[in-house]
View 1 (cartoon, helix red, strand yellow):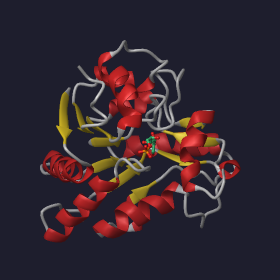
View 2: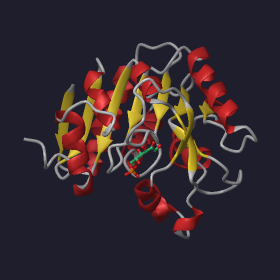
View 3: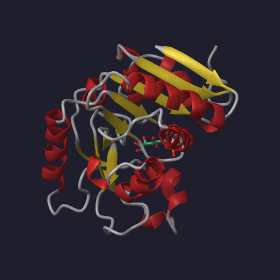
Length: 242
Ligand code: F6R
């Protein structure tokens, strides 16, 4: 595990974007695992700059989302497919068809989850998975108690996650109760992982995930077992590390 501590989100975004570019450079048809939420925003902004400058080549890139809410209408602004097109694919000039997201609108979400796991496999697996971390230590929507062997499946969001994500919705009741999330085993199969955290609210989860016991109570702690994990933190998110 390599931990980078940067003075602010902009610098963090710039260095993490360079890391992604270098990591995918030699890969013929790269597969990037993408996260939603606030944490990756500076990284996507910096990747868009690198794509415009022509250093980050996106023509053969395929992206796979970590997760998707179940049951939001197709045109809902917070549907993760729409968030990723807006924040990631469009600014980078990536074709919508190269962005894969679990189908949270499928009448059979469990079947959609299984199909998504197969799609990752058929794409040759994820070369680099971008991750944020929840205050309760979740990665993807693998909430505390999630099995380390879990694959993509329908999960119930923790109340604390629904409260944290209410900021993106008109009110808390609008936050979906379920999502389709890559499992912890799915995430651990990525050939490399890059964890991003910013802000003091993440400091305790970051400390526990990176330096505490590996336990399903803190799902992100499983990343300690990943052979190629890089962590990008701002000073506040790193403030509880020794
Ligand atoms: C998002 C996801 C979540 C977030 C986490 C942190 O696709 O899977 O695990 O990464 O909830 O969210 P932010 O970055 O908004 O604090």
